[in-house]
Length: 91
Image 1 (cartoon, rainbow, N blue to C red):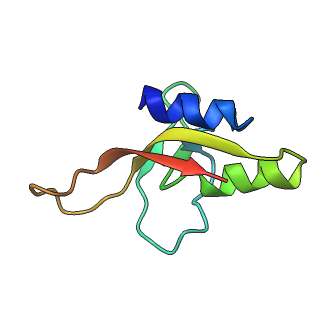
Image 2 (tube, one colour):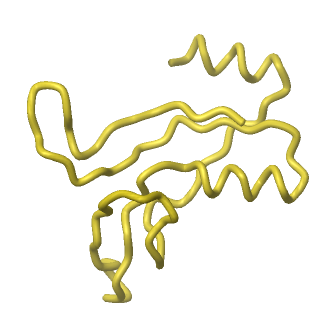
Image 3 (tube, helix red, strand yellow):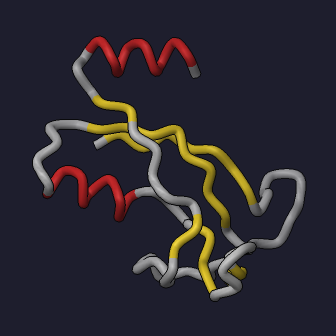
């Protein structure tokens, strides 16, 4: 993880952290975790992927960005699938 991070940083790619808890479902055509904000007690969704947020950064003028992100997908848990996982997204 750290070796990949260093390679990306040397290429002038900016590391970002995007929201995990969203006030609306993502546009991804898949099931999403619906939860509640722990303090405000309003409905929220756990992100499926950081893609939407990273694209917004590019539209706003960033040249290239990356994120090691924690994502959530309500799939059946087995030896190869967990509802929470980490991925690398580079744009």
